[in-house]
Image (cartoon, rainbow, N blue to C red; front, side):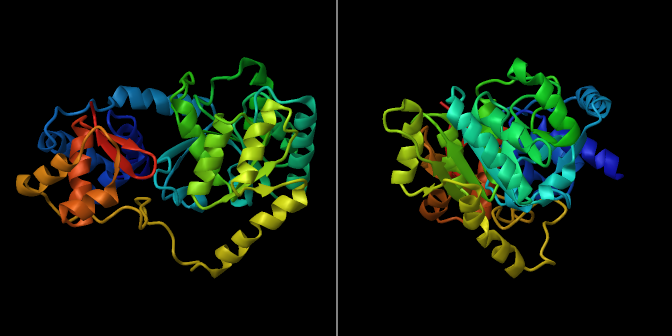
Length: 372
């Protein structure tokens, strides 16, 4: 099978119902190719006690591939040489990224900058200057193209190396007033999306976008944020991924500063300049140098976070205890392994079957629950 057909089949797999990042990687690992995984889905779903999920139609995928080509965009699959190593380290990295612009920007050190949409003028100016100083030092600035701090971060890094991760399709401009800067980034910077062209951003898409922003970067800088904002979610995701979390302090009299001040109180590094940020991310250079340069991701994009399920099978006597341990309350997969007494690959296979059957939800932190 040619590379173009495998790319077609992989896109079809990830666009199918009940196929998330973890399930995608497990299917590819078990069956070796997307075509064989697609063939096996109905049987796996039946074993999980449900109907076969809707498989994306060939015509749907052909239309998406044409839309990508018409945009002058490209596809980047996990496991491809250009796929960022730090992003691949996440527990749920995007199996596919659609991109426009300069893909080589992913090879530079990256820092994420996020913050309030209703940011103050002073904070926006600070974000622009900070981003400009970072790109002058050879760092790519990653943000989400939202109003406020995100837009300012892109404006400050636009001439050198800005990366925008958007929640919708590459051809959808959100917010609408950022159409010009989004077009400029697609030409001179790098625009990344997980959703298909034409997808309007919905509330559920933004947490997925935030994990990409945090996952790409060595560290995340927060500039003005409310206590329960999306910016703090991005910071939390960065911390969970073992990245640096940095925040710019603000006046306690300004509600927009409460999130940053809270982060600093909880252990985030106080940032006042680009030099502070560069000092905090420098240790990643040592980590990269100490790593084995020959140790690359396999072609299926797998790493040690996914247990080997290629050669195992599970019967009802093993599947039933896993199901009985599950409830609508999320629990970690490690806890299921401990309490069931089964090997991790068997538990993962049971969960895979349940998810394909539409009976399982996956949550952050490698937690799972039964659907209500």
